[in-house]
Length: 313
Figure 1: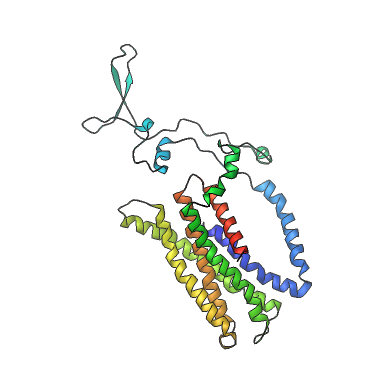
Figure 2: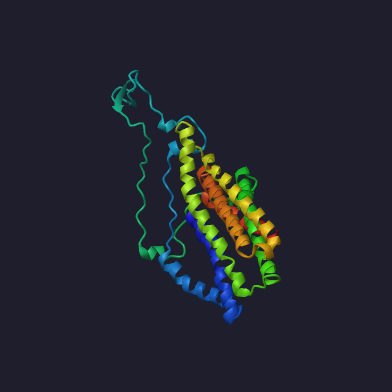
């Protein structure tokens, strides 16, 4: 999860470094030309080397009961126990319907269906290779809209959208601050200012990767070995520290850029971006762990809502 967010935010902050040099050397139009060139070159690679990986797992009633919050096992996973604690299963005796026979019984739920055969390379190239869900098509299309009213989705949008919105705001005012007096940066130098947030994205990736699992394991030990998805939210505390340090520090130093120079505001910009990556990782991990039924629906929907909210800022 941390790596996917690094690919998104790291790439977003590394490209301005290149675009500044491109604009100064061969013109701003080539920024869009290169986007079209790279997109065209990647299209056949995606078609031929990125197959569909969706997989519909067979139904497991025991896991479904746990996901639905049921502490009791479903009926098809129940088994009686003898007084000595051993487990057995009773089946009717066909010769005498009123009697039963005892057999050894494994209390773990068994999945009887065999996995489907692996698709061939030619089949993976087909534009449509079957449905991956048995739900109604219109239900799947309309499912994301009521999910916005879900408290977890609303919380994730706030956690991600707040710092993303501030990051966009800093990107907007960055040129106005450094292109004018007293530093009088040109396009190349202003583009180089995004090295700081790119390093911040790397720092956020490293800290998120180190703390996400460690903090969860620590909370599990404190909770007597019981895992709760809310343990993923602990990472938000680190996001708060980095985000506030970055925002307040950038605001104070950017107001007096002649006194502090270019490095100090850029450093605080890196802190803010590191906090943004941590918040994105924390919210995504919590959504995936707490709502396993709709992870493929929730994650893109949260990203879309966050982007739209940032646009209207």
